[in-house]
Image 1 (spheres, rainbow, N blue to C red):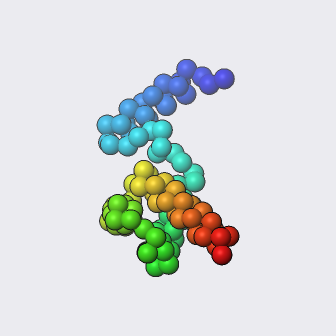
Image 2 (spheres, rainbow, N blue to C red):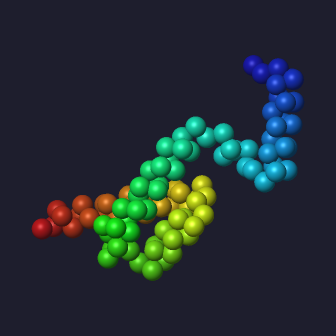
Length: 95
């Protein structure tokens, strides 16, 4: 069980994060660095190897991610990469 002082400190910390433009729920994510690296690799591979499978909207998402990487865009790129890989796998099974 957390002490009253710990809870008070956590509330102060969260208030400071919010006041400085950070989301306390996503600020302390130990997997962020790994996901960021994976998303960068996925965006490069999508552009280099799967360009013909991407729609205009998907290309705009990748370009927006490359300009400014946010949590939301990072996970959108990772999900897009997974979707395209599934699509390629289905195409290979049909042959």
